[in-house]
Length: 402
Image (cartoon, rainbow, N blue to C red; front, side, top):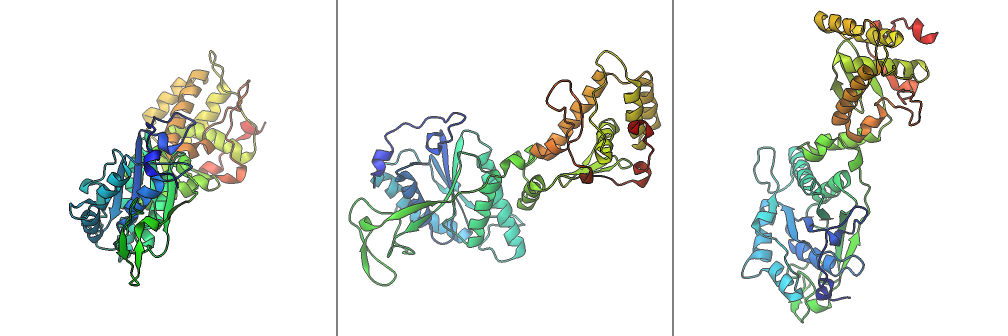
């Protein structure tokens, strides 16, 4: 196995787009979970630095654990008496790894109290939210490569940490666990293979030299669902459940339900309120998709189109709103709708959909066909479009069918 010191002679550089090698990133974070075995931290750092194909020396280490786990980590890894983290860095000349008490994160329950264990449904939910938030925070930094280890802690903690990385992970992020050779696995006195002889007593009473230990890094492939999450979930404080629901909605078959009377739609599993001006335009194309009608050209830029004004106002009237707004819109379109009016409503509609749905909005935005001359439509199949209000659904559309 290559020596750890040899792994660290290269100065890390900031990765460029298209080059997701984690070891080249300026900020490199190891995030792990542990229960009563803080050895997972030193074992994982050793395995990452000694990886012959993709060495990764963290610039900072963060640990998610319980109250007792935090105490054990501080005493065994950071104290003056034991300090196995500091010994590892000194033994293998690992430069500039920041790991201190502030980097040991105690999970909080629903009442913001430090957790001793995960014992209830509420604790499970709180642990999931806490772990998800930490992954979200680190993955929000584009200059950071995140390595997640699920080798420690309760199985529940490891599952949530791995799942959170699947939700938020990027090309430069990695997921792994470590395998420790016998008889050192589960030994309370083993922390990493030492570069010198160190004899310890194993759980079965035998003696073993830590210099002979082997640690294997087992990388776990994961499917990133990040591209399907709305922007507000990538940078906000959504719960684990909300984030999973958003990812499921992005993967589900698209369905659009319009309720003009309530001025709202349901798309991608989300209820979205829309102003009548944008909802009416969406309704024009939704109804055409539902009825199997062809794509439409936009109104001319420098001329007014009476047919466009009629079809738009027909939907606009179905959206219940102030009479003054109705009068103002009818006056504005008295002589027809021009291209600027169409483009403004279309742009505002797309912004609202993208803010609410993220990349999943593409299913519900008005498509221009991609080639000239532009012809606009919703790409949804007829069976994916529904109108909730019977009075609206049964509106005559003879003009559209001519």
